[in-house]
Length: 190
Image (cartoon, rainbow, N blue to C red; front, side, top):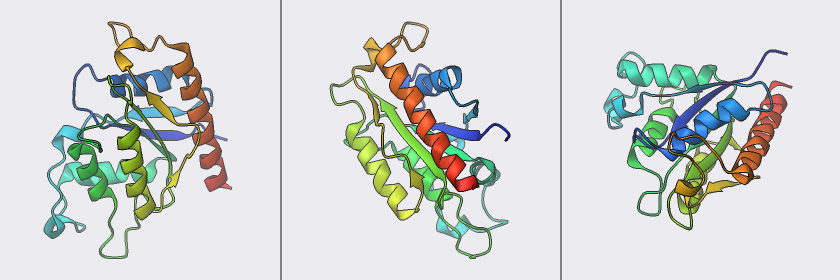
């Protein structure tokens, strides 16, 4: 069987984001032979606009995002927490991915095997952001990994100055999360 293609999105736009660093660590630690593509176009996604959310009208960057998610076997999201929730840029991208008003294209997130994780400098990490993200994925009927939960709280203590994950406990949970995601991908293929 070919390697699973996983499309990874960081909810952070920061250059030194620990959430993006988690995605890079996932590529290095991957126990399942996944091909993980880290998305770098989140900043370019325009605000969601129903009037433009139809084939042939969507901005090219949105069409590209939708195509990448549809073609991926699984989705991996790392999110920081802003105001007890997910960042607006991430929610906006998910809004563009959650629709099919024509009932002809299919829903990019529908039954998509998905894993969630997050990092934040606080003592609660991205706990509330991940809960909010899980609510979004209930609506989209995505197949979300329930356990393990990866919350890299006090994230500045888990990465070195080069953005490399140095915390063995976090690395172990990340491996387990990727293994669980692979299990969902395998079940979807069956």
